[in-house]
Length: 422
Image (cartoon, rainbow, N blue to C red):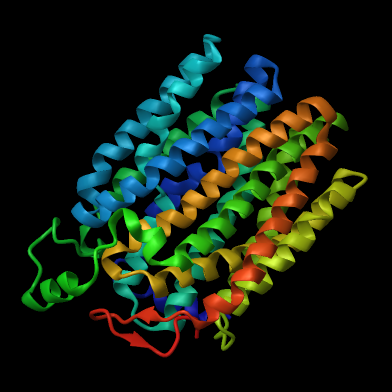
């Protein structure tokens, strides 16, 4: 089962950027929950915590595509050596503001700085596209990336919860900041696998012709490539699902007197996703990407609708584990869809839009779930989860006929091949 993974990791430089990229994006699984717990502990309000998380997510949604466009134009190292530094400063500033109990607006003022790092998970995925040409191998690489993300979400929530509740309110966010700084700058030193950009080095004549032939979509990407808009909307609903699950699970565990183990329950959600992602990536799939996306989103929605029915944490953990089995495969399919439909010189920006969708969903899900949990308890938060899962399924089903007929960009130029979704 693991032979496909060994094959892609044998590519020169792949292990190094995978390792350091993994460390750099460990903050993904810790940042929002770390903020949520820190603010809730320091200010005693889920509503305030939800609003701060929402503003951080909105900032990422608005600014990450801009960072992605700069990365496509000037290269990862040239752009992110500044971006990572600004993001670290923003995190330290928010911790200082929370510990000194500054007004809520002061916490929110730090939020835009977080987004200067962009969508870190897209940087390793861009390197895989740069190195791997075979579609099946690329499917394996995307599955590996999604599975590694889920591995982070196994350890991250549990670690963040323990650090925030047993060590210090700011400790979870603090550890995520160190991971970003150490992993991020080590990742940027790996220049040999960095995707080609006209701004990074002088390309060969054939490389220059290939880059200049491709259309420059700029700010019109969502209009020019409707499939990117569709996947962004689907991922937005998924983001609302994830954010509402985080808040509702913490609140549910708190109501039962077991707040400190809420991270363990969330980790089981991620464990299911990790297993599902590894199994998915080890297979060669003949069904279209569009069909796989619809099945994944629909099954996730069905599972999410059951969370609010759980009578205790054990049942909730089991429901989340089995639902998680389709989460990483669905994320991998979404990446594959964007890779197929976006020109190579806009790949980072294209993938960033799907993460922007997730961030917008997280913003709305965190705000709404925090508001409802504060007034009506954890069960109301799980209603948001069910609605988000249903919404993503509806969008996927409505878009399925279009997605399965959409054409892809060939590796060179703007020619098309029979179908992007094969």
